[in-house]
Amino acid sequence: MKEIDWSSLGFHYTEPDYIVRSACHDGVWEEPYATKDKYLHLHVSATCLQYGQEAFEGLKAFRGVDGKIRIFRWRENAKRMAKSAIGLFMKPVPEEVFGKAIRLALEKNIDLVPPYGTGATLYFRPLLIGTTPRLGVGPGKDFEFIVIPSPIGPYYPGKFHCTTFVVNRHVDRAAPYGTGQFKVGGNYAASFRATEAAHAMGMDCLFLDAKYHRYIDECSAANFIGIRRVSADGKPCGEIEYLTPRSSAILPSITNDSLMTLAKERGMKVTRRHVRLEELSEMSEAAACGTACVISPIDKVIDLDKNVTYSFGNEPGPVLSELYHALRDIQFGRAEDTHGWTEIFEI
Ligand SMILES: Cc1ncc(COP(=O)(O)O)c(C=O)c1O
Image 1: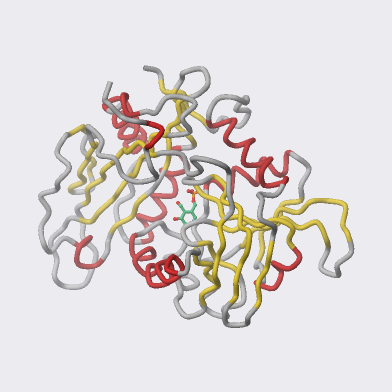
Image 2 (image 1 turned 180 degrees about the vertical axis):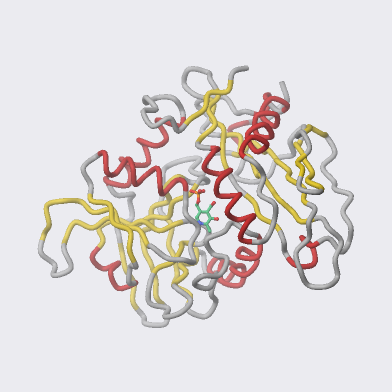
């Protein structure tokens, strides 16, 4: 067993033993293979370098309470990567190749799956790049699919805690009908000016829609969720509403999709629509959600331009805490997986 101090593992890259690769030439994907070599022999004019023709994914394997390893909803990641590939004029990785590569990456790095109880997991970063050398602007026709595994520490090493977000109207992450709905590197590079400015203030960045700067798009690299208990006119309303933005510029989060299902099962009203920034004042709880954190509760959203602060309390709220634990329990095998979200990896 590799000597890793699981308890001090941070939320950053740890070199795996093997990565998995598969190239595509003339439309045919080769059988995925494992290699210890972490470097690519890539042409300097490859379309991924010249024109950003690349897409990626993020998913996790969990060591459960029963010692079994569960991979969470990898088929959804395969489908989303196929959409990103089509969005950037790349050859989609067939689901079968995607699944084989993930399983092989897990098998070859089995010692890197953190033990149950540490909160740590094995993260997979599938990556698809265009490798055709090209100087004229246009897409390539050769691709490489790579799966990079890395054990990562728990997002909340101590207590489940809150984050503060600051609104940015001066940098847009993605345009409506642009590439925001795809998981492609360009969106992230485009967001760095805003996210780094927010980090410099000790906060994270809340992106608004790029056209009107009126509606909530995303929370840094995560979807937004709000919980409402009162109607727009301020009257108490009996049911709990799980509200999340609908926008052509946001990434459809697999975590958000899972949480929406769990929320509906708990009798909540689940609404997906444009969400105006000012509606934050009607929400009792707010959070960012994604694979990395599941749910990252928000204590405050600060709108510096308008000198307004929306506050949700300093502790994670009860509704989002319940959903967080419900999903974590499925991922770690503590609750029955009635949705077939986890695939048990037989060792
Ligand atoms: C921009 C963006 N939005 C949302 C998410 C959350 O998606 P998921 O729940 O599938 O991890 C991510 C992370 O993948 C992301 O990068």
